[in-house]
Length: 95
Image (tube, rainbow, N blue to C red):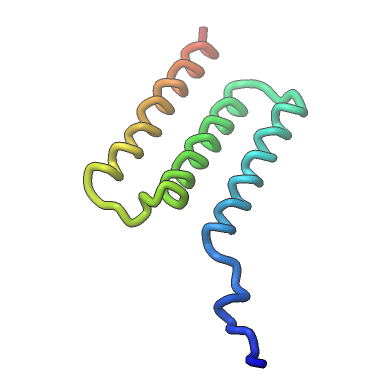
């Protein structure tokens, strides 16, 4: 019987991305469970959500290899609402 190929034993990159998404979700859950609040926690959780959206777009929607307008559509789709939500948080906190 042949020895197993070393490339088959390695964990695929998308598995690491999935585990990272699970970890980020657990961090989000922990912040909510601990009752942490305030502007900085809200912005931190928003940043985590944008990061998770970018990872899903890159790795699981296959946009990592795409160039041109399709890549920009997803980036703009994440940045525009994210910046509007962050602006709303900041204006509400000041008021």
